[in-house]
Image (cartoon, rainbow, N blue to C red; front, side, top):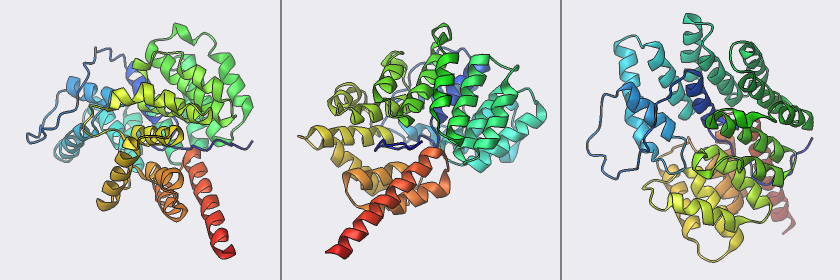
Length: 357
């Protein structure tokens, strides 16, 4: 099956990497009422120690579109230092693995998760996240095995969604989409975090099968206030395909306007919506500045977004291919492969056009 959608962008190198962390917390029965963390411009005082509650809150809020990712750096530094000085507790190691995954340090995240499973083979949280890390690394076969082992250990709805997502990554097919639709018909009975995750997986599958209206409908089954970045991306992809970029500007822009350092993916989709609608170039300019900053700092953690900027906004296919290749070196999910293929095709067309001239 060929996917025709123009906009392929991985979040953390996978369809639902960030959402997986939310579901993982749910499985662990961490039911803390997370307070929203607002971005602050003053980072002069660097916090060096963190309570479990603070870490949970930061990691939970890191999935939000208006989260300032700079707050995660000191937490990661804290874990790296603690890991060198003392043996991490199981809970600390799980947090550390999630942070490593967030930073695209997949090999290191895998190591931490495997250590957790050695200590406790029934740790469903670690197994679920390890399946997602495997997808980040292009190891769909391994992810399927990990998801299959969740059956009987955790909620069947969670295990099945994990399995169908992995099978879709292995070999995109409408069959997997239909199977998940059938299994999740009554997912509204699940907690809202689980519903959001399942609906996002279904939305992404709908995008793979060019059912853009269905993708939008699945995203909108839960309130926008509950959407992580990855759901906003799935919804925005579908809206752009439906030529409804104005909807992205109406609903997403207010969330980002007051954020000191907006998320790269959110900036990208606001810029793409602005390009589609025409008029002001506020978000396009901000995205251009973000790309310049990434290049100046040689920061490749958001290579996919940079590649898409050059592909769709700057119209520089050679640069798009360079960054899509960098992204492929770091992450090898199906979306990463599609992005690389798209950049190669655009670059080939551009070169043929140059030769023709």
